[in-house]
Image (cartoon, rainbow, N blue to C red):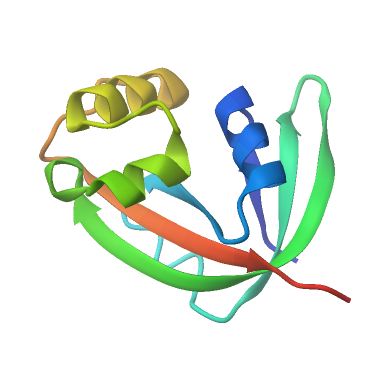
Amino acid sequence: MKAININTDSHLTNLASLPKKGTIRLGDVTGKYSEDEVIWITAGNSNVGKKKICTAVIDRLKVKTVADLNPEDMQFENPTANCTNKIQAHLSTVYNTLVTPNDTVTVITYYELTE
């Protein structure tokens, strides 16, 4: 099963508090994920290990540029990001590369699948 891994503290807060969740991935990941696909949401990194948080269904995939992100999109990735400059800085840190307003990102929204 495919997974979306969350490895920042801001995401972990969102995982526990929002009924509908989401994340932003650098690049167009529509070739990797699809709407209505069942996935695992995991947390952690390769050095420490990853933990399954929940099983989820991808609700929507939106490909945009960083400049086109709206406040709702940004909240999925980082609750403190309320402008494109902040989300750019956040994504640059997460991906360890310079992210510009013209870079393509995919906003992935998902909801927990209760079993």
